[in-house]
Structure formats: C-alpha cells, structure tokens
Length: 176
Image (cartoon, rainbow, N blue to C red; front, top):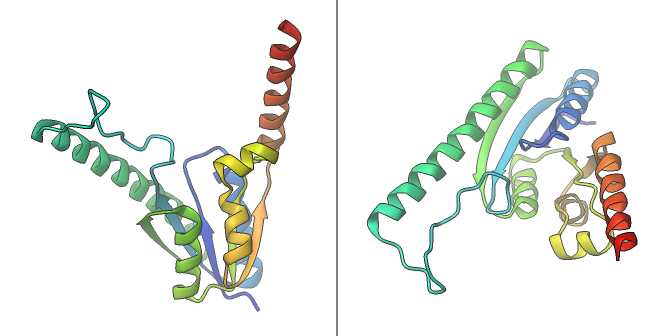
C-alpha cells in the first residue's frame, strides 16, 4: 500500500507533470506527500562565486554578494515549495515540504529512507547516451539506489528537447 509519497520537484517545465502526477496518485491512494527541492550547484539559477583569475581570490564584498544571492536562491525554492504545498492541500492532500542542499540523487534517496517513503516520484530530463553518461541522471541514480519504488514521469518536453537537439546536430553536420 502506498501511504507516503516523496516528490522531487524543481523549477523546470517538467515539474508541472511531476507534481500533477503526484497529486493524482495521492488522491487515489489517500497518501501523504512530501515535496522535496534539492538546492544543488548543478541547478539552473544557482549563484556562482565571482573569481577574477585562474586562482580564485575572494574579498569580503564578493563573499557577501555571493551569500546574498545564495540566500535569495534558497528563498525562491522555499516559496516555490510553499506554493505547491498550498495547491496540494487545497486538493485535500496532506502535504509537507523540505528543501535540502547537496547531490540531488543521494539527497532524494536519503530522505526517502529517513521519511520511510513508499514511493518516490521524479521527473526525467530526457538525457540519453553520452549526455546521460557525462552529465549524470538523477532519475537513473534514484532508480538504482532508492529504498522503495520509483516512478519516473516522462513528459512531452523530453521528446521535444531530444528532437530539437537532434535537429540542431543534423544542421551542424550538414553545414560542414
């Protein structure tokens, strides 16, 4: 029986399908949702430390600017989670949320174990082949290391992204 569903969300376009699938499944099974956003250096919008040379040198002002941007980035994540939690609660689903920092795959699996989730729902970036091997795949990591079942939500965006990249690669190949 599924009573606790961990839902890994981010700010991507795929997120809507992941969230909608989680809400639908939670309604059907009368499960509790835990929404998780993992703050990671690989995430879009994550602030970068300003460095001005090959050897990183920071003064106090640069560090303060970085800390401020990082704090703003984390607050955006919390606001995003709160918004999704409100939507799920309005749909009659008991929902909580958390935001953690670290490697997304490991963090998802650790929280699933600690929270004793029955199911993890994640999205897919649609990476295949060499891109998946070099860039890594959170959904692939979670599938192989999770302490419970995993549902990967694939979307039309994955197919469009793959099609767009194939078309652009063909254009480059044909122009040479």
